[in-house]
Length: 236
Image 1 (cartoon, rainbow, N blue to C red):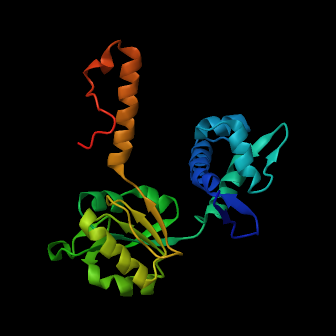
Image 2: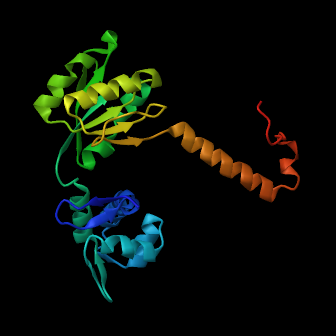
Image 3: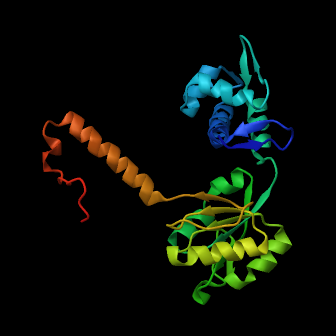
């Protein structure tokens, strides 16, 4: 199993745990906003949608923040997880591709409230240049090097059509960006040391469609009779 080293110690945190930490942070933030001061592992696990044993094991990689018989101090644990993830500091972000999706991402208030500041919106289409989205002006794609240098940007978001995504990723890497969030279909090739997270909405919908189809097969007798038959070994 791959793991990441905590920035504050030599301990290694498994990638699966790293992926769940933002979920715990979101749950703790909701508990804080609801006025909850302390919670048990069972309550936090329920809010995060995991089982309590998994939650306790995940939190054990961060240290011991719970008190037997009392539970977790919600605000303190929220801060510790935010600190471990790195969102207690301000992360400048650049978004490339200001179509419908890019507009939506630029307007997403969750970036600002979770430690990410959109410093630039870039697009290759000159008709978009100067347009303001969420108070940020759209600038030419060719300005990226200067923007990354001036704002010390390490995180880039790709919201372009698939055909342009690899070229955008190459340009991001060349400017010094080392983490990329990719919304474009397809797989990006990047050098070692560059992290890519892919968000493919169509794949997520197809997975849901799969589960819906299986539910129908269970609840509706004969529901699978009209599904196409595929012969094993067929090349068509």
